[in-house]
Image 1 (tube, rainbow, N blue to C red):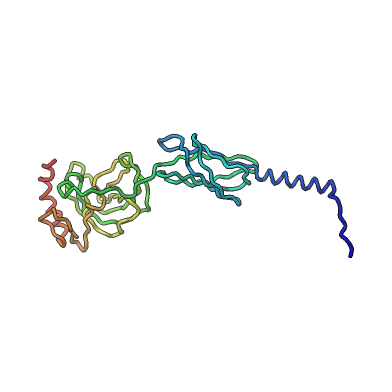
Image 2: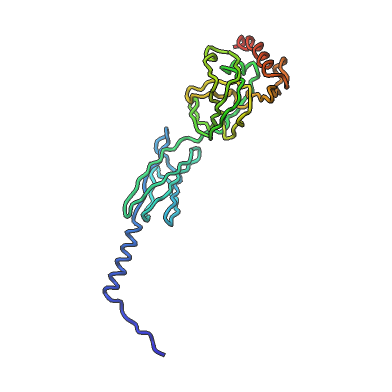
Length: 260
């Protein structure tokens, strides 16, 4: 049996091998750096940064100055995700050049409330707290969005509503147009086409009406009649026509205003 010939690598082969190694090193010498800050809190330490991309999945944690870095990356497009408890996670794409560096800074927002704590203060309180009582039909529903209300971040859904009638209560209630926007807290929408008697107030920061005490003072209306399950309005019963319910609320309005 013939033994295979053994040959030492030529100088040309060595050069090619060394060049390939150098090229591989160059192809994985890029990096991504950045910082994470809170919108009002300054640099945020302890933020988990996740990078996904060209055969890469890695994690890093921001230091005391909010800085992070990923080394030895190949050129390409990467997705960065910043996560920290009590803040809204952010995803961003970054393009890394061959052998170069890319920098990206995150600005995180405080996490939003999706549903607050609703307290039913009674019908008299409701008439005092609301700026208007409206009979509305929901015409359109948006996707969930985020607003800052009274310095607090909330997730809510914007509902375009047609005002069918209004109980005039305050100096601004007469300026309510036929079409308004009502925000419901959380990610669950009221259904398009549904009708309600809504106790609302205007939120200047977001340019929308918002029901007082969340859904507690959104009284459903079916086929022109109220679904009334409250016990603090002796002159209103479930099955009453909307016009009768609105008239019953109007009767209670003077005493509610006097209680202020």
